[in-house]
Image 1 (tube, helix red, strand yellow):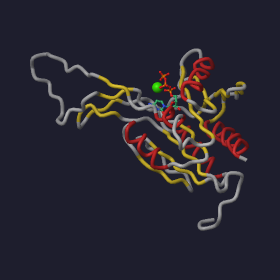
Image 2 (cartoon, rainbow, N blue to C red):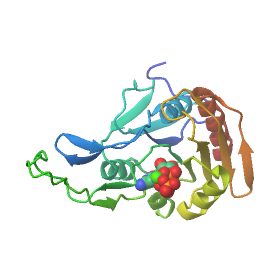
Image 3 (spheres, rainbow, N blue to C red):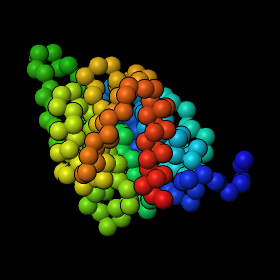
Image 4 (cartoon, rainbow, N blue to C red):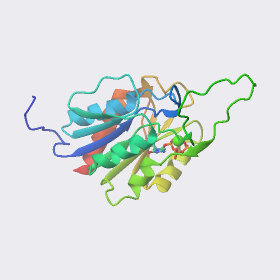
Length: 221
Ligand code: CTP
Ligand code: CA
């Protein structure tokens, strides 16, 4: 199929996906990270490409292969992810699956922090990272369909409804990460929209991706 014109319900559409964790540097050898594997976001990028979309996948540090037909941009930290997203615009739909670190170290050390023998422990002073989804929600380049994810350990749907409004998204896909979802292969999600909530049963992340991308294709058609 290489070189052929894509067909399928998302043909001619550009879908932007963020996936994976971010790594926020502390010093040249250390960073702050989280347990995101990138699997759900990569599955969504793959599913969108299968439906004929042109897909840009902005990926944090993960060990996954690039899905067929997907353009991948690798980044390390939240600020790089924000810049890569801005560069990839315009997009018809954006699906922000990345587990972006909320905070980074306020001033990264140029050299490896050393134990100085005095027993004094270096304090880590944090500062807030840019909210990539909220920026996109308020941007003149806002994609027609803007989908966020919400990782919650309690009050999953109400917290997602609050994020829908706060971030200016069209849908928030809420997942309960109180179990071993992060890093696992299964996911149970609630698709939260302004006019209601659709709860899907627990299923493999590939199946969640297929269900979500089908709905994205319907919304863009
Ligand atoms: N997000 C983002 N940039 C950030 C933080 C989050 O783009 N700096 C996006 C995520 O990719 C996701 C959505 O915002 O699509 C919600 O992320 P989440 O961590 O659940 O929400 P927060 O607003 O960061 O709130 P909290 O972590 O306190 O629950
Ligand atoms: Ca967060």
